Length: 266
Image (tube, rainbow, N blue to C red; front, side, top):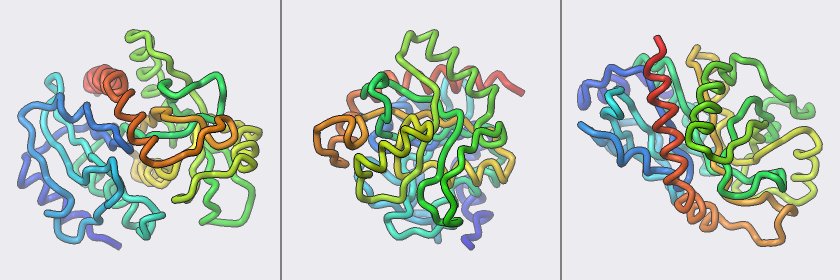
């Protein structure tokens, strides 16, 4: 297992970070980091033994500073199973954040919508998740909606923030697939029948690990496309990153308001 203590110490040494809020940014979502002031940027590649991501739309760096007076650390980019990383590597950032004393974690991703009424450009606040990777067992996927995974108070904050901004935001179940290939229309139909709201290739390992470590977690998906079979258009990662860029301004505004409200919590 990766020893995350020296990594956390290196981050503190370079930035003097002492905050309680962290954000993990998904594919093509980065504008919120531009609003951070008094910032320190630490590339993942400069941290010994820290895993590296090579996926387009994931810049691979920590940005530490202040946002509206709140001390914050943002991870721009994540590791994925389909890159060949282990569960240990994929979840290393969460364990580092725990060592830094993080109490509140906002996990973001770019995801495919499973519902025709939630088109690209809408956002989804996860209130549950399903694991379709079958890496832990061979049973049917279970819906995990326990507040241990998805903090009810943070979900309420995200809803009120979206209402303040008059954004098109829903709540729903995030479905995790292994990737890197996109899902088939038949798989999407099954996910929708089981109650899925969005699908993507990340996030659930981070949710599970943050729950184990006692970090209160909020997950928000930027719906960048319709999942396979809902739209007749072919799916590509380039499209996901491009659409995330189109919707990132409103998404960052939502994150900024959520972070401001979380910063007032004890």
